[in-house]
Length: 610
Image (tube, rainbow, N blue to C red):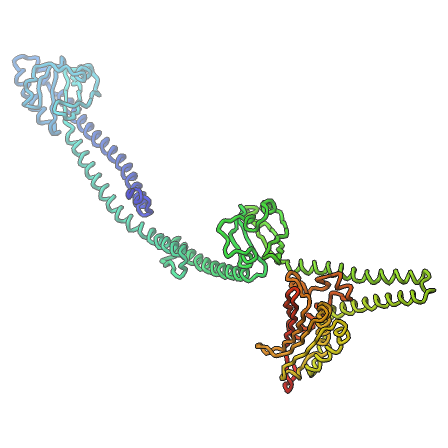
């Protein structure tokens, strides 16, 4: 495996590429050079051998040695002369020359070791061709010693006829030894060239790969988030330009990531502090992002990774699948916070679109519309209640007016009773409209408080005096207790009078004959004025306490309406107390009694009014 990894290096690849190019070039040159040299040496050797052979045949043709051979007495001398001539004529080392007569018999040889061939017939094909007059007769043979020899046979002409031939066998060993030495020189030169090329290749490849290694190191640093390092620029060549471009890219990438991180922080901060819940999903409908508000709405501390949006919201999959198809959807999600309160969320589903991928997910925005639903419900209920409260007296007035018009005026006792009913219902309508006007002023913020110095004891005594008749009718005992330091306070006398009248009136209505009512005023631990109205009445059921201050809400609707109530008294009282910056609470137990506590910020006598 290390060998394969080694060949993955650019430096090794460059060196190998240069070496292979040099090797191929040298091999091509060597093949051409050696082939040309070999051809040249062989041709030179052959030409030289032919020239000397031609010269020898010319000399032998011009001499009368062949005519002397016919004389038997001069044969021995002639052979010796031919051997001497042949042996001294050739300067090619190791060459053997045989002089043949016209029948192919050996007359002389240049080598003394080959004298036993004299007198024998040379049966070579080349000799036969030469004796037939063919001049170009040559071939290469390999003898028993594995030596390559050049063989030439030339005819000898005398007076226009062939009188003999010469047979030359010359060793080509020197030629091939020369070729071997040239090959060795060429191989040595090739190895030296490859060695020098390797050294130069390492040095030159290093000038290319070293900057690449630095770039690789810097790229790794950038991938790990370190943008402070820079690639050194050693020149203005392509690698230098690449280094400068990489440094510029690093700066731009660092700036882009910084901006991206800043935007992510802004987005995370916005998501965390949004009043609406936000859930984002991938293309499969699995939650990938959620903010704190969404988790709070769903009543979980953390959403499991990869949980489906339909499971997180507790809804069907169809709206989400439809959104992932590219359609927007909206629906209401209801969740019970406890047994008494139901939370209502509006869920808006919007697809996330990408230019190249279509729909890549969905965004679910959760808006808490509980208060809006309550207000809408209260508005509908308010309109229904007002319509009902006005319709009842109007129906009564209309009925009695029609009765008077139909002849009841002719009967004075009956007419007086009908007129009394009409007057009573009219007063009831006036009280209802007046209460509605009070609430309207508080809702619009147009009700102005008029603070004045008030004797608290005197104010509470006057409240009891105003209801003395009703108290005597039901034999109810009423008492007033005021802490000494609270006799002089700054409050809106008319507004608090209205609150106390309403509370005392309710206490009298729902207290049985012979009961008691206590009005207490003191300063509590929080330095607030606490006015408490305690009664021993029938009390209020626990299920109704939470809604007792709602407009037109009655615990016992029929009884309250018969007693002349509009269902707005406690609502008005709460608004007046709130306008003072205070609170009003009710504690009650069925068949035991009720305690209404009004807490107001106060300025005691001797202090500056607010």
